[in-house]
Image 1: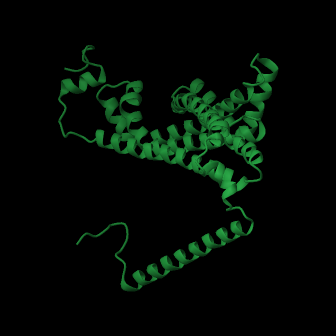
Image 2: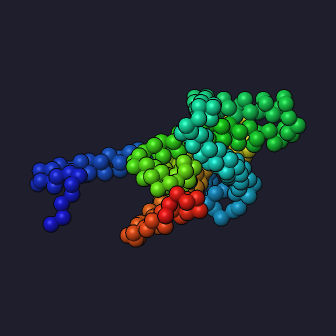
Image 3: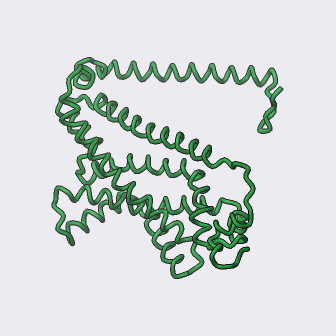
Length: 299
């Protein structure tokens, strides 16, 4: 019989207790769902007329409001991800440098922007672009949203990268240096490939935050993203706020679930690809890896 080392097998009373808790939870969940349904029905929020623009087969709501808003959301999120990911990796690695002139400025930048709310960074960016650049008023909200997202999330990603690398056993780097590898080779060939797999769930969680935080630009900076389009859409179709925001919420769920599903698939693939073959390296193999074959330091 298989036994888990994480917890003891449940006895008869524990099994009965868990069944009771499960049944109570299901009843409570059903009661909550019924209460929500009754409240919406009482306020006539479930009338077909309110949901028809989205579920009735017409495309006007999607082509006029939802798709343009979704396009702006994805554009801002994609630009922020493309810039924040490498910038966060550079800052995270810089914080691990042995040189104080590299480590200290990187730490100051990370801690400074990580402590400021992303909305404040967006507002600051909007004022900056308005005062000191030639960016048009139509493009300023997008620039400001991307700037705020990049500055904040790059700082958070830097801490994720630093923590992921520090979480690896010190023996990894010590063994690599023992065969003659330089520090940049240890980081690039040994530590980072292992840390990326461990950091992937946290990185993807931060990417999900980037997608959701684009809504701040629509709420404050008049950036025409998905959530802002829901406000305009609900007003145009006549007080169907719940229907409009429900459709938008479902779209956000699909996007973020797709991100997390892709991350889970990628993490599993990376873990399978990094399984050891069991091969034993010879002296020449280790010398080649360490880049010492041509220096005469390894025979």
